[in-house]
Length: 181
Image 1: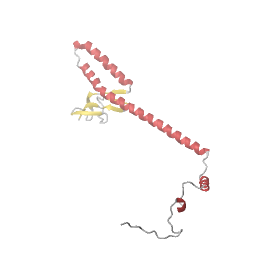
Image 2 (image 1 turned 120 degrees about the horizontal axis):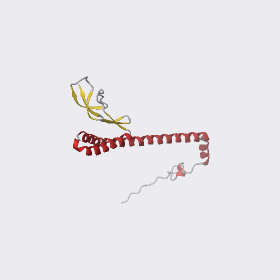
Image 3 (image 1 turned 135 degrees about the horizontal axis):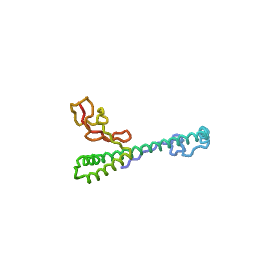
Image 4 (image 1 turned 45 degrees about the horizontal axis):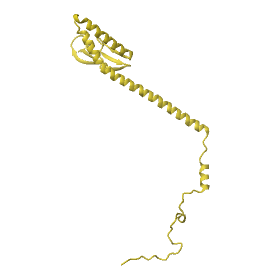
């Protein structure tokens, strides 16, 4: 059994629209008159506009160049600071070796002294300076208090256990000190 649907008889005005042209939809081709009107509506760009645009782009590029140069310099400083922090225990150990050298070991102590002074010179050439705050007022930004001793005026650095180091105003390692209480 098959079902057939009957189409009602429609007049030409009532027939369904089957093509874009008949539906009044655009076919993708624009009317040249509309295109011309669109061109006329857009203001014509002046040479001053291009000059201003070029100047803005040039300024943006110059700012980018300066920013990347600053970032590269900062990255270099961080890397140098990391290397120096790793070398500081070596400097401390050389100083301990020099302090513990006995009379019969002076030839060995002289070699250690040469290595120590050469390492300190390399650090100084690279902007690293050591500081020994003995007798100064305790400053938690530059000093690390290891202990407090009741001796003298409160808040003074009595002994320096390890010297501090700074580079370009930045503390690489605070001085480890004994403070009076």
